[in-house]
Length: 388
Image (tube, rainbow, N blue to C red; front, side, top):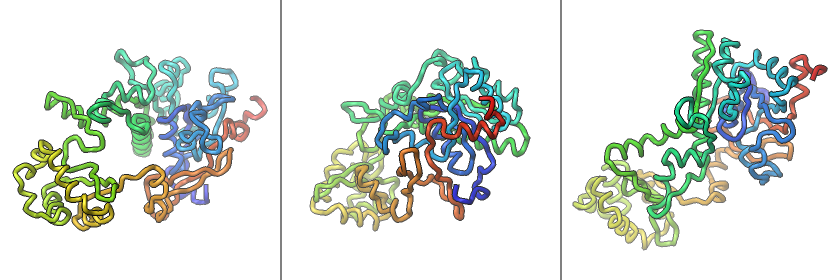
């Protein structure tokens, strides 16, 4: 940390996380970003299996680098006598305990949230599972893509011809953010009451909340939300449009004011706003293909930057269709210094600043740890250096 420990909002909070993969490590990394001390418990030798998802960042996994900066790695076998001795010495010092072991494993070890809260009344403990407790899926293993399938995400994503998964680990990300939310709420509750909290988060419940809009649409209409590729499923015009220079740009209309502004300023035809086929969004959805053809015919004589300039002039939200390479060079990232570097066992690696900006406070951007890198320091801190 770069000398501003006391300024960080979670300074003084100790998190012990028995974690692997993405959801739990992402949640604890967010806590570490803002000052929490995060002790990551890993398997001796191999560590978190996420370390080997790929080896593209100086020999390290891109997903592991993303979710594990600013942590201490403690490699112990929690089923061994020595490993349990370390964990039992560590838990009384923990403000937060997070675990995402396989179904039933934490309960067998007495490390489930409810058991820990009984033993440590001020602790904030979170159990993470695939499908939550109770119900026929409670013991089923779960990974991001598989839960996307179960929750209908693929059914609404992709083209009319073929479903597609979300390109990000969207279920893991959603779960990690709900875990973070739960920990912060519980810390606030403890400040007021002195009491700890045991809570649960699951991948399925997290993406269920995110699936509310398509579920409500389907339940109310009796038909599924259509897959529309890059176009919005219920708003028009909203999506990709070809321009005369061969590029594709995106824009979206949210209300009647924007629709009329589009027609007057961008399309150069104020009267088109009252065309009986397109006056309202439901009508535009019914006649979407005709509307798309009309807009692209107007754009055919224009360059993409000219179209984007007119859209800005009309106060209509718009975007380039960027590749990831173009995103990495995005002027907004560079102008605001959002791209940073952190240390790792394999040398400096790229990282992005946390999404929140707190004026006058610099987030923590410490190295990604090696497996068991902090064992001896933590053993000494616990007074166990000579015993383990």
